[in-house]
Length: 300
Length: 262
Image (cartoon, rainbow over all chains, first blue to last red; front, side, top):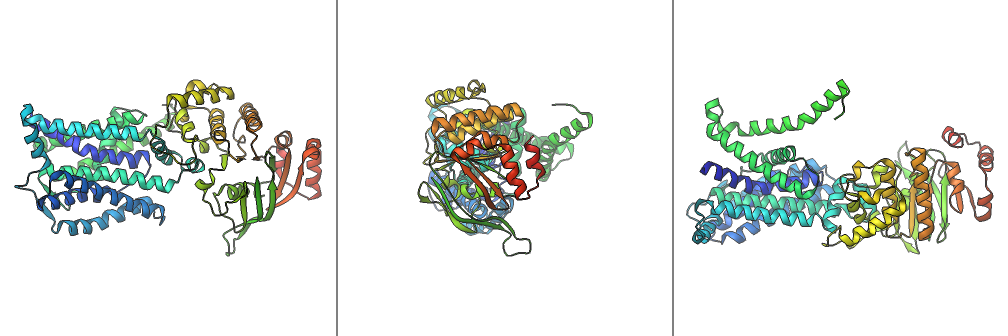
């Protein structure tokens, strides 16, 4: 039972990161690798400040700010310096490795003995008698609020202009939208969410590590793709729902694999290999299907 | 309404492959003018539109719209003055968004805020405007544009480009990739909207008959220069034979133009 609760909690916390990936990959059509740097940035900022004795909530908020700045930086590289979007993300991700080490002062910060948000929540919600479910409920509420805010925002005038920037840049320029601004805004929101996710993961798992961002983008993509496959949809509201569901399923699968995988000869270090294979297969399916259709002249 | 002075555009300037797409054009249009532009491939028609819309910046010269010098304005800044429809129906609309969402994007050219994009009140307006097109689109407000036919998409694009009554409407062969039936529908819609909103319009076309039927002024571009410009009564009396004659005088041989006369 506690295994399931843990996976759901992780699915929710990492789901915020997956929502960020949804915004860049799907909405903006901008494959943004900044996340591998902004995730540990959020974690690093939070952990450093917690160790200095700060209250957990401002620690988290500054983690978000870090992510927003990282996304903005990638956006500026791409729009103002015209650096290829993939390369812009890689550059930010790489430079953030050094920046994160500067922020943290060392590669790993344990949070033992510090009261994290999770413990605060447990303490504050204790009178409600929710027992071991209290942090799960807290995370669920938090993710729901973020999801609803995104749903509302992406249906406002600015939000629609942002979506159109990813859908048909030429058209929306002709409608008077500064698409550079929209891309920067989208990247800032996306990486802000990733920073938030990193900050919460640091408090949840009790440490921040400069290497904890490796493969974030792939995990995010896996969640997006799993969600899209299970809940094929086209409205934004359902897309966010699908991605959170995808994240829950992904994390549960990972937890089960970590717990029982050794029976099949897997090591926990094989995780990134398996995740990447899942993404490759998911990305290959439409291609293979298309080829088969060409061969046999079928319509889908 | 539109005034261009010594407008020229060179591509690959300073290299061996330099191409002069437009050779210092001086040109002006009055409010309410409906100009049709013809010319062979490479005549500079699309470059001309791109320079006016700001998708390209000129090598020399200036562009004024409604008395304002917009030469250094970027494309999205000029959008406040300009509505534009492209040749490919896909270019003028966002395929992954609904008809109503697309139209809401065209409702404001600046100062977009955190108000809801598609409201019931706006939908009523869209319903009304779409009914006028006669394409049956008013019942498909919540459908993705990607599910519409080319003609319907172009109908949405034309409506989007005129929704805010632009000072200048640019039509870039906007019926060229449609089948004849849809093309004539879109032409009718264009004619109606331009008349109703008294829009100053530039329409680039390959179709000579279209160029003669529509508008009060006709211009021909050839190798980056205006070589023919008629308006008013003379334009009304103009026939395809007149155009052909002026072509042969200038020894213009262009299969595409000749074909489009059939």
